[in-house]
Structure formats: structure tokens, C-alpha cells
Amino acid sequence: MNDVYHYIARDIKENKFWLNSWGLRSTNAEERISIFDELFKKAPKLVPVMGHRYQVADMSLEKRPVLSILGTDVVYYGSDFRYYLLNEIKDHLNIYHKVYDEEDDTWYWNFNDGFEDTFEYYDRTKLPELPFWKSFVLFDWTNHANNVNL
Figure 1 (spheres, rainbow, N blue to C red):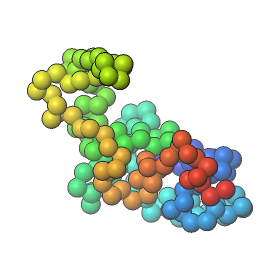
Figure 2 (figure 1 turned 135 degrees about the horizontal axis):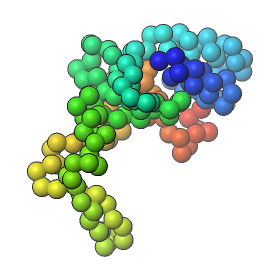
Figure 3 (figure 1 turned 45 degrees about the horizontal axis):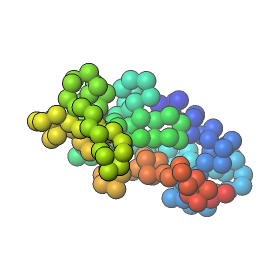
């Protein structure tokens, strides 16, 4: 958990990372870290799972998602531990195959019959409420300048 804190804090200090939901970005790095410290203390705790995967430990949540956290890049990796595990090992289960779409002139993966309901479809717009961490998951890296109070 210390690594998660330190990598995010570094991005706040050195890379001008700041989420709009945190309020106006101070020009003073120490003030930014102070604000982040308070927010991080109140954030749902994380339990390390493997590498940079963490499960949210807030027992008040209906489901406790697993997040992939590399600094400020946070990805929703499964709504609970079961879906996380299925996501991690799906390549070894022979459950999908490639299909060519002539209209789009591209290949895409399609689940074999009977597996469609076993796996979650990741939809950022339907994420459950997840204090603190959800704003990282929804952060738009492709439009970084418009999401950060510089």
C-alpha cells in the first residue's frame, strides 16, 4: 500500500497530476500533498493481491473490486475477486476465439458458446460507487490537459 501512495504522491509533486474532484490545484507542492494525504487517509484501504493488483477492502461495499494500480494509472480489473481471477486466467481456458469482421476489416475476440455470461463486460460508465478510487479509473488520459487543473 505504501508503494501506491508514493507513486501517486510523486505524480502529484513532479508530473502535475491532479484530479478536478480534489478542488483547485495549488501551485505549492507541499499543499497539494497535504490535500492528497487527507483524501488518501479516507480512501478505502487496499489489500495486495499480486504484483500491482489490489482488492478494495471496504466491507460496506456490495462487491469489492480488484484494481490494477500503476502510479496514477488505475484500471478496474474485476467487480470482485472471482471476476478478477477469471480475467487473469481467461487466456488459458480456451473460452474464446478470433472472428474477422469484414465491415470493420479487423479481428476481435468472441466467447465460445456457453461462456458469455461467465465474464463481465467492462463498461466504464457503469462502475459502481467507489470512493476515491473511481475518479482515478475514470480519468481520461487521452485528454489529460482538460482533466487536470494546471
